[in-house]
Image (cartoon, rainbow, N blue to C red; front, side, top):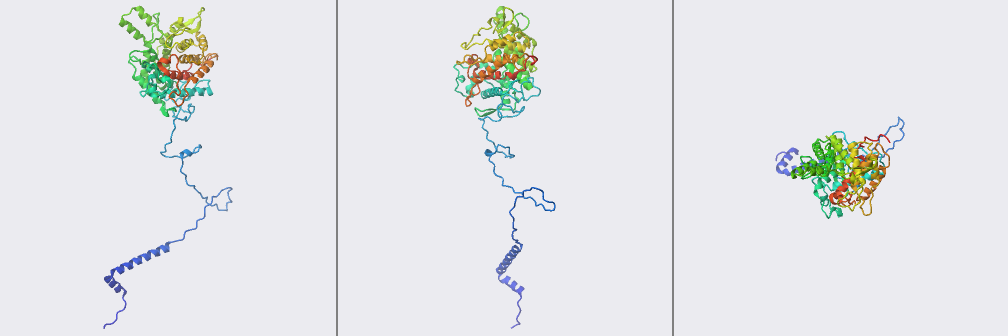
Length: 562
């Protein structure tokens, strides 16, 4: 036997790897596990003991030699905010892309417009700062941002009239047709209502649509709102928001699109009530905004109105206006071969009512910087000499006739004569013609005429037959100019009593049914609206009546003496 060999570990491992490799692999795995456990054990340290933080209340500064510990800040978790539970105090929280539900059937913001800035946005507005935005100063300085409703009028009475105007404008916004027009014939189509005024037995004629659209526009323009207005009007009855600038723009675009080359707006042939109202609306739209787009249509309307004026019977100068234009009368008689006497009789025919509207339109054009012939205004004043009644001493009695002096004080007959007639209406019409066309504060007709007007102040009888919105509008306009807060010879004998009476009457007649389409409108008819313009005519005209405080500056230049 050979000599015995000692234990050789390397050869043993090699032989084992050749004979049993899996044993070597298992041993290596165990070595790796043991090494990792050793690292974990040696790296672990027990956690530090954390003291519960305390809030330090600092009072007096400690002595300098003492160390001041760093204050510890404890932040509470941020709670989830519920917008419906936010406090009324201002909270500096911004929530991205979170819509806030808006109930447009509720009054929001300042419904009377007292806190609006010029041209700003609002949820509901009245007639204070009107949001007018233009390229230059307004030629109607009494309207526009920051202007009060009336010089010398303050307190709850102002709020009442502003609220009434706001409700009236809401009614008008609610009843505008999609094409921008307003028509008495479509009121029930736009906003269905059970009120009988929405379903007349006799359909309202469509020929007056240009006139009623112009009246509605004048109600917005009268408060200083133009097509550029950026304020919103919330109709709480139907829960809708209207941009006033869009209301006015659509109405004006509809009117301009229907203007004929001769400046008239009535289909087929001119009807002077329509023409005067349209000329006034276009003139004020241009004057308030100074938008060049409206200048040409406004001037064309003014020119057409002046061509329609009748010639004076003396053969020299101009006269008043009637339903048809001078051009149409002359064209008709030439075509029919009528005798000169027939032509003259109709050609010199004019009336106080149409003439007053024409003068107001020319005055608006003049204020707006449009070209208005002085002869047209002086001709209107000359016509009033024909209708003013004079006593045996030659002095004016204050009464005026519809066609001439012989009819002064007499009832103007026509449809719906069962309504009361108010003779002071013609006196107020003649006053407005002479005030705005003549501008003579010493005119001897004005004081006796004002006396005649205040003899019959606005009132509402039980049967409703005393209502006359037309007389109330012109009475308010005339007396405000003659004896209002800015009048040169204010006496207090005419305007204050009339103002109180007309406000009481109009507010009593305005619909207060806030859930009906009639809300804010005037449903009770008067003699002139019953068969023609209906509640559309009544509502627009009554808003204008409540705006007389600031529609025009005093024609005499303001208060100068007592």
